[in-house]
Length: 255
Image (cartoon, rainbow, N blue to C red; front, side):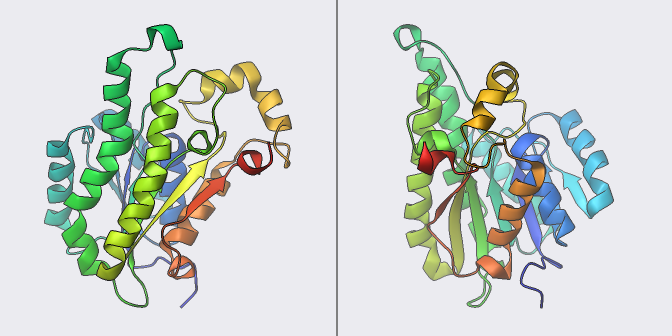
C-alpha cells in the first residue's frame, strides 16, 4: 500500500467548510478518504460539499462544537452512518483581539470553549469509533489544529487565542500518552499565516511584511496544509504521536 494512501478511511474535519479546515479536508479527500465536514452553519456546509465533491465522497453535518452536548451529537450522527472513524481533525476555532485593559471575560469563554475544550470533548465523544478503527500497524488519528501563536508571543492583543493554542499543544501531548495504548495517535499542527477568513484583515494590512519575515518568503498555500494532514493521517505518520508540527515557513523557529 502506498504510504500516503487513505483509500477506505473515514475522516471528520470540524470547521471544515473554510480556511485551514477546508484545505485539510481537500487533502484527505484527494488521498482517498471519505470526509465529513462540520461547521455551525448548514449553508456553509452545503457550499463546502459543492466545492469538495469533485475530489471524493464528502458530506456535511452541522454542529456547534463549543458545547459538549453538540460534540456528543456530532459523534452520534457520524456513528449512525459509520462503524469506525480513522481520522478526527479538531480544527474549529475562534479568535478575539482587544487591548489588555478592556479584554473581556466573554472573550476568554468563547475562545477557550471552542479552541481548547472542544478538542477534548470531541476526542472523548468519538473514542469508541476511533478505537474501532485503530490497529497496531495503523492507529486511528487525532489531529488538533494549534497555531504558531501558541509557540511564541504574538504581536496582536489576542490573549485568549494564543493561550488556548498553547493549551491545545499541551493537551495534544497529554492525550497522546492517554490514547496511545488504545491505538490512537494524537498530534497537533501549528499553522503560521495562511489565507483564511480569520487572517484576512491581518494579511490585507501586513501581508507583504509577514511573508518577508519567513525564511521561505511567502505565506502558506492550501497544498501546504493539505500535505501535513495527509502525512499525519496516513501510514506515513503511523509512528508519530504527541508532536506539534509548525507549518509556517520557519517563522516560529527562526524569528
